[in-house]
Length: 401
Ligand SMILES: [Zn+2]
Image (cartoon, helix red, strand yellow):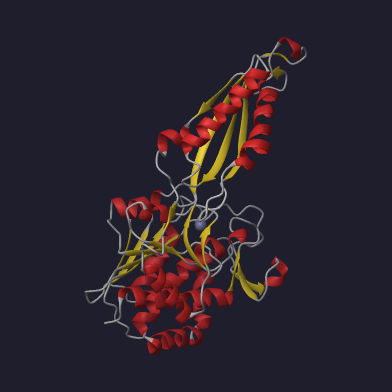
């Protein structure tokens, strides 16, 4: 195995300019969510050029490429989304400029552009890892599969489609979302709850005649922020839940009317010891307290996550239960260096595979803090090293024939 890894690493360094250009080309094709067609066709063309056994695009613009194994090994699927968030105020978001990372608060040479970090760097590395193995004549026993999925930033329909419609699955799944070259084994769950606060509308020139629902909502928001959020329990793996109010609306929406209704929404990233039911009860507890204090306070919790997510929507691939985690650590160490084990702060499509019982591991270039920002970039050397890691992991997990 050491020889194979050395060959792979050498190939990447010898072809580094071409690998860098491949990522720049990928960044140069805009692919905001719902507009992934061009980038999907580009990737399928490349997979064919790199001698993937099959490569196709489905109706949602998900790309699925497979290098068929010789048989008898575990299959390995690498998932990365090809859509990206809006460009915002980014300057030259689609050039894929090579620049000094210092200008962005980083170090070393970086590739700057929308989706460099989230997550065309990883997608390019997945596709190129297949190319490296094909060019070096490395035959895997298990299948090597790359899913470049659409619509991740807007909910995950792309990954769902590759699973439900195409049965594009494997024995082990890797998610390439940014881990800053460490090993991620899961993330917290994601919950959304709304609260409707009821008041009484009146002319804004005489506010004392009504009940201002926005003022009442402020009381509850303050309690959520200052009392409930800090009091949630810490979990040994997932840490502390996050909880924050993200949206607020009033009705009627008029500058000269005291609002009758105010709705606000809470985003909460939870763990199995702080469930949707716990949050639902806590919010109702706050409402009861406020009512006891103020006879005019009236609010109702909209239990969105109680209805949609009865189960915990996060996951954790426990190294004790899944020996593949230990194998991945060894393979990454051999190809690159020993990774730390941790979890992502945000949610990924990994949850969808994990809930099917498939062990999911995460490794990708780029830092979480640059995703979705104007400083979207990836370090050049991390990107190149990720190609090595993905090919090394494939050799270990699928087995070399
Ligand atoms: Zn992402």
